[in-house]
Image (cartoon, rainbow, N blue to C red; front, side, top):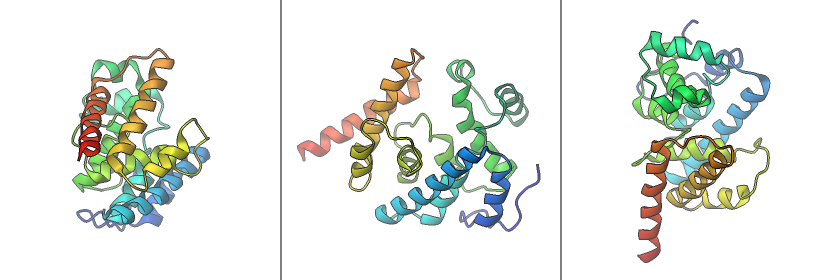
Length: 207
């Protein structure tokens, strides 16, 4: 893989057209369309909440850059690139793409902006003390217009216009419900994020 040209690294000022063309060759058509939807949604949310819209666009476009890599190849790449994986991620390889994708932003797209890299890294499991950019990417991923409708999506979209923290709690709890429905093991990182946002939202109610 060759790095995309025309990137100003530190400010997240990526040549979107070049990055988009490279990404198109890495993903299925459906995944690529989803990525464009996340990019547009993240940019709109960023403008609404006073977050750098360019960084949101880049994170949204590239968040799934590792998603369509063969699961066995993911493990090989993680070892080669020094991406550490815990037992849950090794067992549920669909979780690996966020960590690996964050690394590929550096190695394949020449991006060294820590805010963008961090947003991609945590867009699947979430975490405590998420930045607003991290929240925006997590949420844009699950509400973008190409998403197949699911129970609660319109309520979540409404929350995303007014309160990022409560929107995160809503989204994470539905993610937890889905994982339990599939009888998969919940990652401790997601459970910690749930408790974190639950505390924040309770505090906001009592204010």
